[in-house]
Image 1 (cartoon, rainbow, N blue to C red):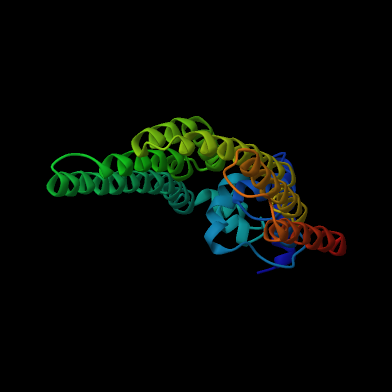
Image 2: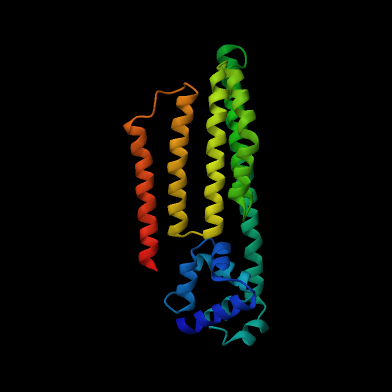
Length: 264
């Protein structure tokens, strides 16, 4: 196989589809540097993503591996397009099967807890906490499992919607008011920073610059949580150990940004 020919063909098809290297990389869940290596003939696409790449570029596997030289022959043979078209839906089916497995597993575990709680205590006590926590986990994980793209955003949206009601229910069941008051303050801070980190990766891709930005945001999150806990009188004043965790995130950010500049 002529890697240079294949790389040129990938670049031509990508441009014809109106995609940048970063956009193609995002749809394949890889780095744009990997796409650049393909197009310059330094490497070939991994077999695990080859079918997805063919689908995005609207080509067949034969066309990809031959660098476009056997396009007519590939178009006249219906077997490969049929095979490619047949495999893509199965990925969607696997996602739904995983979703059913997740739902069934969590439901079964909750039901077992109900039965054990009833047998041991004669009613429902601690199992209600398990049920509420299981429902919260299900709502957070389901978008990640089902959605091919946007799963992270879906899970963040679920966390944003259901975290406060979950903490309120948990506080009522435990009869500890601080679970709701302190927990809500920490959850709001965490969700704000998580959305900012998500936005950074969406804008910059899976790059060292995005990693450095995420580390900076994590340093800010750590400092904010320590300060909020102190103001809420739920923790002592921040000490050297708290400052050490912030410093470690700042050092990690510096390494990421330095590596980015060195790579350029």
